[in-house]
Length: 149
Image (tube, rainbow, N blue to C red):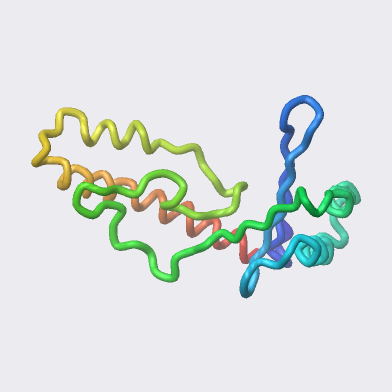
């Protein structure tokens, strides 16, 4: 769920039979706060949401609150590949959990590298990056729009 006014979001999923994992997120200015301040900020942002949301935030032990800033590059990378090194998976599209999409990276990379001779790897990795870039840019753009509300 995303609050379009504030950009705050809340998500919940089961972990095993008797535990839940929940997450909230919002745009922050500056470094992430400590657990208590983070809780206060999230409660303020979630005011008016479903009572269960605020109850989960209020009752979570401080030791169970983990704050993780999600960095975003100021300027998109010019390429996912440099020489024989390629950036794969989630680092290509840093975004909040609800924005994530299943990765097709292994199949795409295998398709580009199947039958490659060592001299072909650099060129094929550049082609792989060029093919994957538009989709990664769309996901990142959508995640940014969602975060801004």
